[in-house]
Amino acid sequence: MNEPTISKISTRLKALSDPTRIKILVMLSKKACCVCELTAALELAQPTISRHLKQLELAGFVTGTREKNWIIYRISPMEDCCRQLLNIVIVRAEQDPEARQLLERLQSMNRNCLTNTGKTFEAVP
Image (cartoon, rainbow, N blue to C red; front, side, top):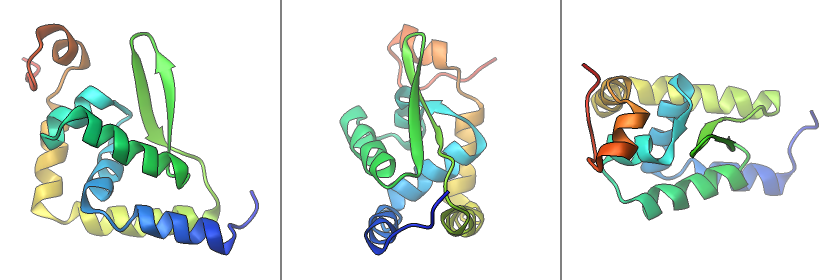
């Protein structure tokens, strides 16, 4: 892959300037997720999560692919320098107690339960 331009670097750094987007990246570093999982874990409205995902997509950090009824988001392949930057951000963010709680909440979620029950969160038995 080619090294990023100054414009791309600026876009990526702007994407990393928001705490919610960093939380999303931490979660996606552990598990590919649909919007409903991110919405439930972060306890934010779906349009808010979608707006953050769009910024992360434009910055080249995440990609979404359709799988059945969902668009599943995951960390994108990227240039080495950007991957290193993202890894630093994720490793540091994972040390935050709030990030650890989010990851625990995410692990206990079931995508099918979230979309079929109308509930915002349902733990897997």
